[in-house]
Length: 313
Image (cartoon, rainbow, N blue to C red):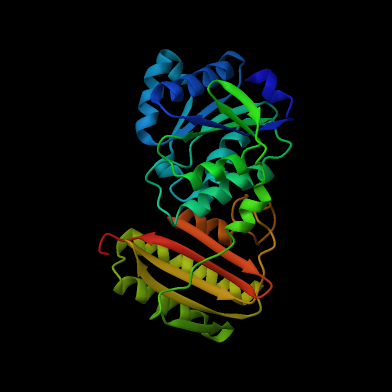
């Protein structure tokens, strides 16, 4: 893969389409070994069951690889660029790094998929020009047609049957735009208006609503600052007012903050805050605390929605 992929530029982002575990191993193990033989730092971030299989295949060389369970580190796709891919690459400045990253797997929910697809599209923007190769496996036998079509649209090259080729469907900006949408909250959801004078009231009301819906302990401890950060951001950066709503949905407590601002940076919350600047950490923190973050932004304003798992609903 090295010679063909290197022609694409410093950053290389192939999708690996596999149908069997033999396909999976034949596509990932040589990729990892090629990196190790070439002196490249290598990380593998895949679902937990795949980790053990790859470790076994690599034998004694497994100790030279940085391993991450993507079901944990990347359960919120918005964490993967800063917390998994970027964090590993930043540890090795000035050298080519390679990563196996599998952010989409059978079992991801329909509500998670848009965030996964946008993540894969934004990888190309986040790492453009950097000496980095990220191989993303996709289970072509079990993922649905939408997931596979989005994979082709978010990866400039694809590996199938051991052959690498350019993807004619590559259109990452289209994918980002296509998923810039959110369904409305449930019909009976109450939105609490706030402004600079009602910041504390709105933050307290959101936390109390989450508590009544079943969040306790660490989960409530994650929810409360995330909601508070979004509410504060609306007042400080998006016109001084907004609304907050909290509801239960499919085993999660969901919080949505809406305002009249526009989020122009597609990587907001997915890149480290600039050193020495007091701002730029709020949405990054929300991604870190939440299990999923979705956003819709446009000329009419922005809605940011985050999901926190609860054991009671």
